[in-house]
Length: 88
Image (cartoon, rainbow, N blue to C red; front, side):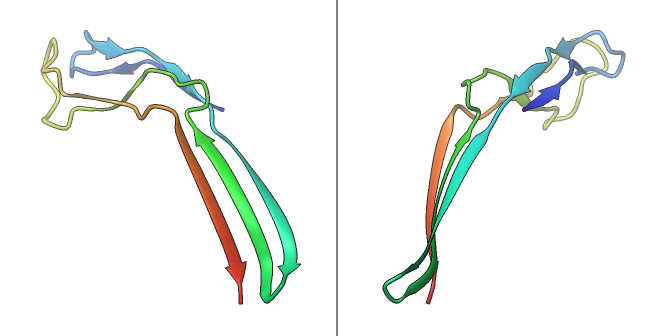
């Protein structure tokens, strides 16, 4: 779990984006030796567990002196990742 506080957007700090919480989780299981594969393992991860809506980046086109230019990038939605790995 990470908390990102309010961030100011303009140079005179009159425009800001709100703070947000971002949680991720994951699990891994190691099967050990299975047949000719050694250390067979399975991973499953979830990014943005609670599907929070947030601004991840701002100011890609430059920051304004006052007000805003709407140069904001929305954060990623909930994502699922899985991995299977083995040594031979």
